[in-house]
Length: 152
Image 1 (cartoon, rainbow, N blue to C red):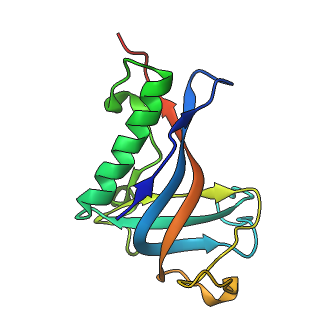
Image 2 (image 1 turned 90 degrees about the horizontal axis):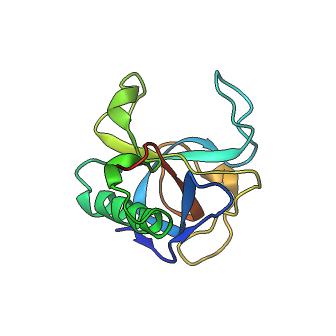
């Protein structure tokens, strides 16, 4: 189960807005960069990041992500349709060469700042204790949405 509150928009650029306070259900993590920013590989982001793998059978989380993105987008663009948005939820089948990605949707939250990590009782955890393949709930302050086409 995932939750979201306070959809908001940005007026800085007309082509993007944000979903605020997104909390995912418990999902598998991959490609963690929690201790140091992602500086390696073909596409370094130079940010702290993680891939959150959401099973395609988890229709509740998928619908919540779509509804929250559309609600935030409608505040900025009243006639926009979901098909005209880029919401940051990607199809893991596109990354069939990566173990665990097929059969999942994934999101890739990033931050310029180190991200605090907490256990179930809200006690701080050492980042070293978390590995790819572990399951966790991820909380983001905002998730970007973009308009990919102009409505008619």
